[in-house]
Length: 133
Image 1 (cartoon, rainbow, N blue to C red):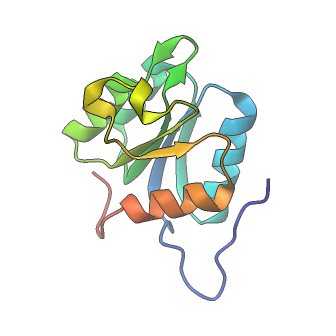
Image 2 (cartoon, rainbow, N blue to C red):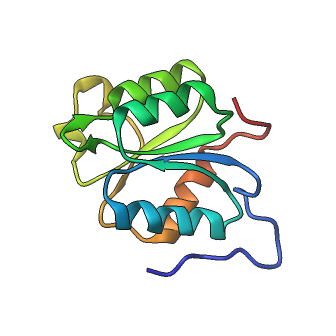
Image 3 (tube, one colour):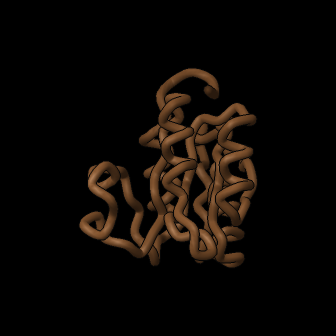
């Protein structure tokens, strides 16, 4: 998987704090690499619900990418905490929206397998102008 590098203009992710919660090591590293190539500041990646919640509660964040299934647990509590803080997030998952609890069926989803440029575009589209929450 290649990571996109924005050239000739500033990346919409430049200096943005992006939380990555993903329990599959290689996917987490690919996400980190893609976001860093787009000049984002990656928070994490972390692999557990507890680690994700701790960062969601304590770090300045502009957006987040959340794997739904975290070693048997679910990332819904992280999504809820981010929403309380008005931090936009997307699920990165192999689940279809119909397999999610009703309150998350309209949530943004990037399907696995994914291409690095798609996740960078999806995260960039979520971030409003301004600083981290």
